[in-house]
Length: 248
Image (cartoon, rainbow, N blue to C red; front, side):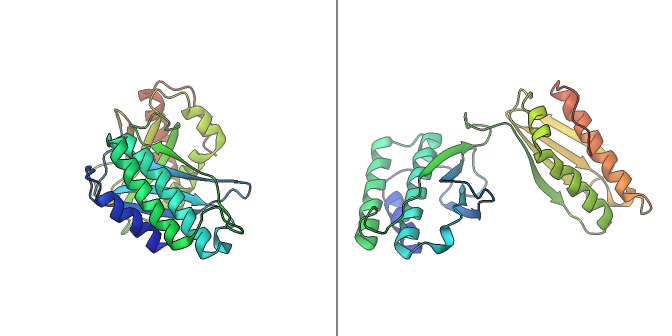
């Protein structure tokens, strides 16, 4: 797999293509859907903070793949991801196509024919993600926050439990009415005073601001629920959304 990635790294670096970052990170995760037939590479299209990012949920049979199968899968994922990233960055199509052809030829020389006898090939597609990606679905994304030093465990547990609810179907249906598709949710504890802030632009940035010293040690769960309720109420008002689902 490493050698396959190096072929693409070399081909792209020699192509003359330029962008806002000099490196591309690839993150692979297990797919929780046992019925998933293929692999989707998610290409983060917004301007990167340090490096470009491609992510993918791997097929359940990934662990049992042969070295050749794993190498070709990495090749297919990088190929699909770089094509979509090229659209986002406005890369010259001919230069990119030549670089990808060069990389694929080098991979084939190392691994043999990609569709040879006994070599499995999973279908791979790529989709853009981020405010600048037209195919970005409506999504409430809990990014995280901190620092959590001194924050009662009961508060953090209830905060996480409630924010996890936002991934449920009922909340997805509620957020689908938003005029802005993507919302990033944060929580901060190194702030001066309690507040809930929602900024609306190309994407929504929402934050719970809760100073550690304002968390009553006798009622941390109730404070966490009040904070999340206030966040949902603020989102509902700012985005002119219908009544939200029950927070239970």
